[in-house]
Image (cartoon, rainbow, N blue to C red):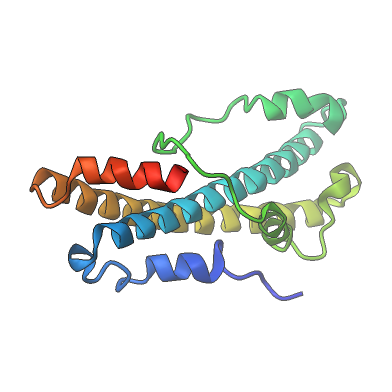
Length: 187
């Protein structure tokens, strides 16, 4: 099996292309809003994928720790502790309120599962140490890459939000028109 494409694939590649924001200050408001919604959807998809990946990584790392410490408890017994995120530091998210849901969750799961080809994580306790270590390395590298891409998408979102804010601040956009446009879209 070949290594998976970068997290988010071509949609995120397009957002991260340095030319993506070229000329944004000259685009109509509706187009700037659409670009921001596109970036928001990509960020939600990446966040969802990261949560899937982090869950698997937490389980694999805890199983390796359990073995190293000769902890007699089963991985199933440790799940409440793993899921409670004991020992994990504070979240590094930016506190963004998500207004959309991830698209195609099965594709995100497929991407995460493709990070450690040949390692079936459906029965972690049965895997030999070398498989678990390989999975932990692959998942950790995938998480770092995904997080970097997510931060890049967040920067694009911030730039687009900044452009929208600039237009309102400079009197180039009309709040009443925005509200009218939104009410038409909801109807």
